[in-house]
Length: 157
Image (cartoon, rainbow, N blue to C red; front, side, top):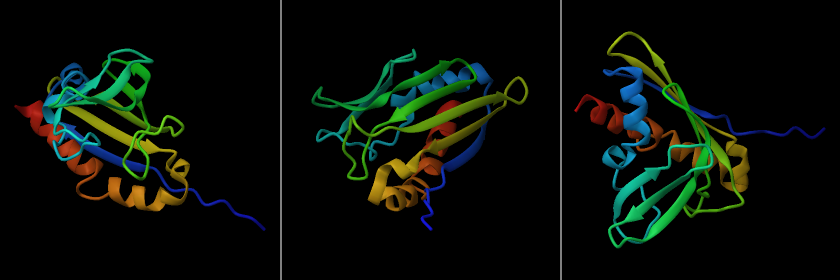
């Protein structure tokens, strides 16, 4: 009997002190302000992270030298409640156009100045032999949980 084992998605939740629209805007249009500078796949130090605001838009980084590295693209753009990004960075931390995992982020208003942000990084089995190592990395304190803490601090600023 052959049983396929798939890597469970990584799910993280954080509440931010901002309205739903502001939380969405800081996460997407403001990603370059809060994304950790250490989390780069470029050879040049990270200058900015760009999410083009539309389905099909690019998701990429730009280094201080002006060079760009693709991370993926926008699969769904539903402001201010949801964005789904194609993560196309391999287990070797390089862009791979053949790989597609998904990062879905939902923004749920919990009052005028409070938003619940729920992130799910799924289809991790598509990393193949690297699936468990990648899952462990993105589920670590330096992974999505820590990244969302940077986001929450930017929203509060």
